[in-house]
Length: 151
Ligand code: MNH
Image 1: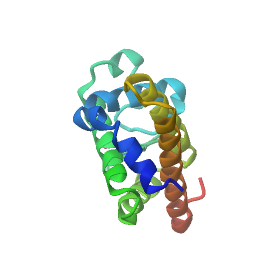
Image 2 (image 1 turned 45 degrees about the horizontal axis):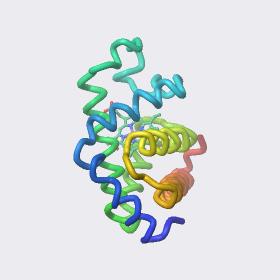
Image 3 (image 1 turned 135 degrees about the vertical axis):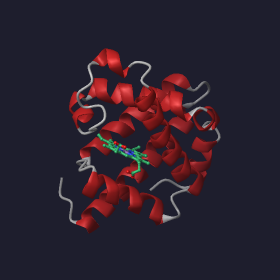
Image 4 (image 1 turned 180 degrees about the vertical axis):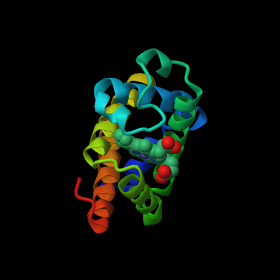
């Protein structure tokens, strides 16, 4: 599990993502769909769209913003309030039916995008980010287990 210091280390570089969640979130979702095309099919809103329509798409930008804001909320909370991820696991398991492996995939994408886009994100902060994303995935997995969602 990531330490409090690791959450703080990540947060010290998170300003640009907090300030512009839509833009970074858009890049994350586009990169997710590129890396793992199956993931696009899990979004009813985006499933049928050809690549060209994922560019400058206000719905995609809006959803990217929602994802990034939730991640910022998790970071700022330092993984303390379990309800944040419990609610997220519940909607993603029961409503959206997202197999847990996709949280691993999006975590790798987030890592890649953050390191690529954020200046000064050094090796220590990179390790901290990896651990924080690992904590996110582990806790999501535990809630998936509690819900009996096996995928
Ligand atoms: Mn996701 C909706 C956050 C990863 C598919 N997601 C939401 C919502 C939030 C959110 C917040 C809106 C509230 C809710 O339904 O709970 N999602 C995240 C975060 C991550 C994430 C913080 C990881 C980081 N989500 C994923 C992944 C997939 C996915 C991975 C699929 C591969 N999410 C969805 C779908 C919706 C959704 C589908 C519903 C979108 C809609 O049509 O409004």
